[in-house]
Length: 283
Ligand code: PMP
Image (cartoon, rainbow, N blue to C red; front, side):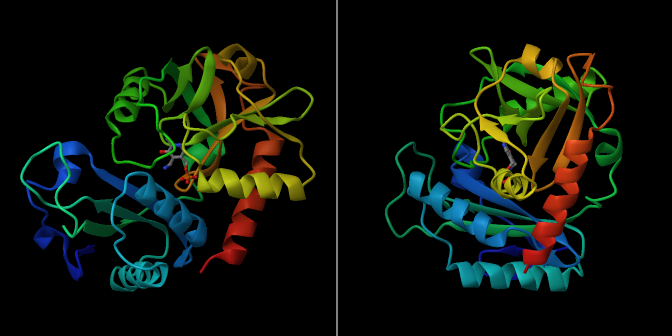
């Protein structure tokens, strides 16, 4: 693979960051993951808008204009001949001697991008659905900032895997916040799509924003409110969204099958409609 690091395109084995990089020492860094289908970027403007917001919240310097960042994405797609998968982007506060106090203004951020080849459309998960467990949400209070502080979600996912399941939904004060790397939804028995409202407690998913629009176009009713694990287990359908998984069904929560235990029709319609809409706007 050819990766991008601080202005250069290099083979991955030659790409290096300092051991003093604040991304490594403090998780002082934000990231984005943009899906690629047919060599095109999905929801790119949304990912740039969220990146700007994450940078501003942490007062991290900008690594370049949206046009410059788009050009790097395109160059990486070309150099790696990537048609399906995604591009990971990370901005850290750069290199400085280890100190809780930030380095002086003008310290250049570290800027890294790389491609990951994935077949994201015809996946087993999309066809069969995910089996999830629930775990307490022990993350920090600003989950709306897309930081690389992913230790707890990684532990939660490993707990799911160790129990033979696919993923974990996190629960706080009795209601589901989100999945380890995705937003969580249920479809009630009367056909309403329910997902937690935006706030500091969840990531503002780019795919979430896109499917809210798609749901409106399909005349599906959406309610933004918290839901409990018990309500989810009694739902007609459940699903998750992310740039990596698009819309993926959830067929089991803590051992309880959802609906008839198979991916539901509303989830399937949303996935197809999301992919169609996102591809029509891909750049
Ligand atoms: N929530 C969390 C915690 C995530 O890590 C992600 C994926 N980055 C999402 C939601 C989904 O966001 P998006 O649709 O922008 O990929």
